[in-house]
Structure formats: structure tokens, C-alpha cells
Image 1 (cartoon, helix red, strand yellow):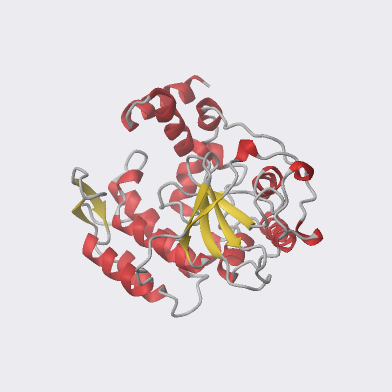
Image 2: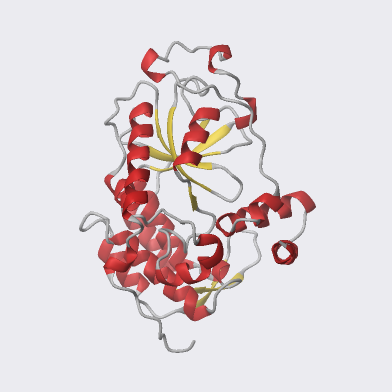
Length: 329
């Protein structure tokens, strides 16, 4: 690897547009109040600081922005922030108690398939109860509890990003990929409570980049990745910060997005209350096409996965097709 020459911008350069960020934070608070879920301090700080804001220049300047003022978790594979409209739409059409048997959700991000990362509480839990983070599929009937808190999710996402930078190498040099990961850790940990894995994450991010062999599943073919954290360091840190449970990941049933009907036609469970009823009338939603996703750099990863799913091709073929389509726009 070449010597690192890119420098981390000063902290004041990491702030997003104040008015837009504050409006986004207020919208998140309003949706959280409707869902009766308390917004974790780290999540609200990231939103209010502009760290979850892609912005109007993202389409034209996404590459330079990632190198200087990246959105939080930009180094993490398959994670994209929702804006206020996307959060409202997800709740209105799909993730509200009347449609989900009283279960309460506060969506804040999504993966490339369109599944939602959500703060989740049982319908009977008080509003100030600690909310777990679940991944709720848009096209399936079973959600998974990923982590016990948003802070635990944040640490796990950054740790995984440091352990595998290979997904960044389609768009960046190795030096740039390392720089983006370090900048991402610096930006997120700046808002973490002191002692909440902050120093450990920063120390791991400061390590020299190396190549490591990883195996994604017991029978998967080993592959070589560029990383700042070795597989053993990743596993040891994760075990220290989030001790594994003897039980498998908790799963619970949900109604897929397009099966949701108007709230007044949903069967009741006896758990809903007037305060939980959604003020919106949900409508069936269809997944966006890969062309629509490819038109916006913010959803490029979603476009690649949508193309792969549609044509059953590998990532290289999907990238070539999406790049060709974008060049024609």
C-alpha cells in the first residue's frame, strides 16, 4: 500500500446544513412521538448534525463528498439513511401499529433490498423503554432483532466496515477506501458517549491496512479482503462489546409491505389503543425498478442488487449494466 496522504478534515467541516439537519431532527422527533418510541441520543445527534444528510449535491458530487464530508456509516456495506419523507412513507404505508399487530416501529435506514432498519418496541412497552434495532423485510413475513440498541448497531456496523473494505474498491482506490473508513469512524464516534467503545474503535481504525483472508460462511469460498481489522480482532471485539447469546437471533412476524391494507380493514389484536392508531391510510407499494434506483447515486447499491435479482447475474455484470445505463442518462 502507498503511504497515506489524505488528511481528515477538521470537525467543523463535518457538519451538514444546519437548517435542513434541524428540520430532519424535528421530523424524526415527531414520528418518534407518534410511535411512542424514544429516539436514542446517538441517533438524534447524527441526524441533527447533518451526518445522515445526502443533500442536493449528492447526485453530482457523491464521490468528493464521501472523501471530505461523508454521511455516517458510508463505509458500511448495504446501509442507506432514510430522509424524513421516506420515514413517513414507510410508517404510513406499512410500519404502523394498526398494520403490524400493535408492534411499534421507527424506521431510520434501509438496505439495498429495501428492508428497513427500525427501532422496535412491543405494543405494550412504555415509550421510554430501550428500543432494539430490527431489520424488517419489505417482502417477507419475519423480521429479525439485530441488536439490543442503536449504539450497539453503530459499533457493529463500524467494526464490520473496518474488517472488510473490499466493497468500496469499485469506486475508490485502496488509499481512498481506508481514508473514508477512518473518517466515518471519526464522525460517528464524535457523537458517542465517552467510553462507549469510542477509543477502541478509533484505535482499530488507526491500524495499518492489511490484506486478510475471510470466509463468509462455513462452506463459502475464502476470499481476500482489504481491511484495517483482522478477522480475529473483529470477532474478539464483537464478543467483548456484545457478548453472544446462547439463543439464536430473535425473530417475529410482520406483514409484508404490499399486503398491508387500510387501517380500518386490519384485524385487531386487542393490543392497539387510540393513541397507537395511524393517522395515515396505507396503500400497497411496489418496489422501484433498478433503472429508477440507478438514476440516483444514493441508491446505486440498491440498483445493483435489484439488477442482480432481476437477471440472476453476478455483481460485475450488474455493475457493467448499471454503469452503461447511467452513462446514457
